[in-house]
Image (cartoon, rainbow, N blue to C red; front, side, top):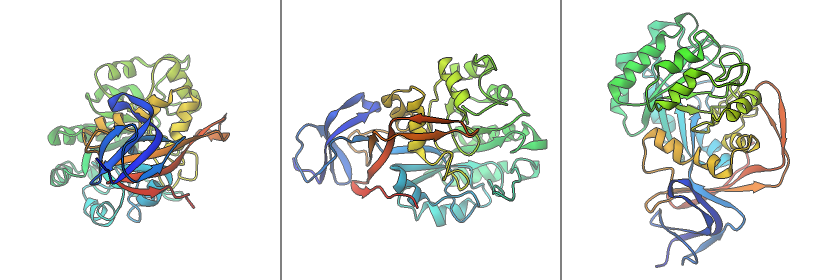
Length: 377
């Protein structure tokens, strides 16, 4: 059989199928047709590169032009080899129609969303204006959120709420109860942000259900997942045991080398790796998904585990069987390079770790069409 395009000679790494070897990936009709040696068809030589399922950034903010924190999804995706951006709460039920019409529908990259339970989403997050959207319980729009989620099942993959001293302030943990009700009514997973207390990390994770996601799982003290002596908090262990998922969600303030080292030493790795990229961290310290993945390599995670946490695991969290793998019928692939170039990796507290390699984007295939990586800026 002759195919439309063959990615030739790369290290094909598909954790969903247990594949990790040098071979070819062939596409026909915009879909993966085969994985194997010496496949026939027009070829793109990717020798020395890593071919993965299309990378999924499970935590982004891409309501560009609609919120102060939004970044352009296509520009971001082209510079980071991401094929699916999951926007987590930029829009709420009051402005989701605009997000869908003006960003999601026009983007070349796939954009999915966790709908914020707050009416206008994250509406006041900028260098000069910062008002937590969960401060005022009058903004908790349960009925509207259920209606919007049910009307947009093709792109709304979950419900989002932000809890903590900055995000919910005087409302405390109460917005979480509203969001859990919405998630229950819609049958969707909930993603909960946590920042500084109150409430505590333990109080928040204690309420999450199997399949729900706690993002910012390596955040610094206070409200870190580990005690000061490095031991994992019992509430975190209990939550993972019952099926709660833990997402890295780097962002502007939520990744600490100290927390990450202690958590991994306690056997607590993130289920999913995401950037939490937005306008205030895209130029550092988060930068993008590949930089965040490189930080996980620097922490001692293996490359197959890091790739799994950005492909198979987020697809499972999203309950999507059409992405996160290279089985026949899949439409996306990412091509990366692990370059022997020293890189300074900074966390949100300013600690810098030097690492001798970095993951870099080469290009992506979306619906069988190749796009070269484009340098940001």
